[in-house]
Length: 113
Length: 107
Image 1 (cartoon, rainbow over the protein chains, first blue to last red):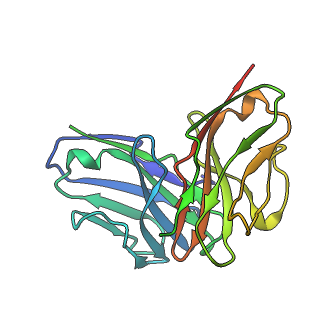
Image 2: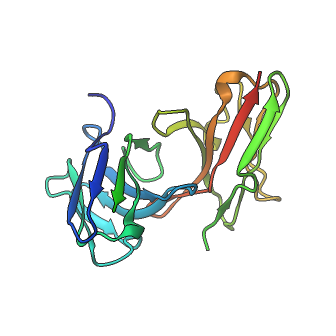
């Protein structure tokens, strides 16, 4: 496909369960971002990759959150021992470089029950 | 703090009326600013960026460094403009989003 693809689109997890969210960026895009969007809020930055290097993880809310992009394309955001406050839409975006137009995926809506 | 402020969470206008969505930013340098839009059941997409100074779907946004604003304007709103609009500033390794303004255009 031509756009950023995220899977699953919806995920319901029991509290304490681990989840993994996948992002397929646009081919050739160097930059990849993860954002968390709580209900009624704007997206909040989680982490940034340049190719396979995680250059910024300052937005990850706790050490339960982990992201990787081992081959510089597909990325996975993992949340361990999910809590109710982790319920949100998780957005992935990719771009050709820093500060250029970011293309967003549809997001994964995570609900922790 | 690297803030982008959108003071209006909700905005309703009648079709054909002018619309202005406000955005203020806090940054002392030359900002890289965008407006992103999210239509119902669609993904976030770029509407326009200040550096290109173009009009997209009739929308324009002018950077006012003195007022640190980047308001989005359209002279005649259309029903298809109903959507969520985010003002965004690029900086460092991330994009800073405002909280968004939900625009409803009343037929």
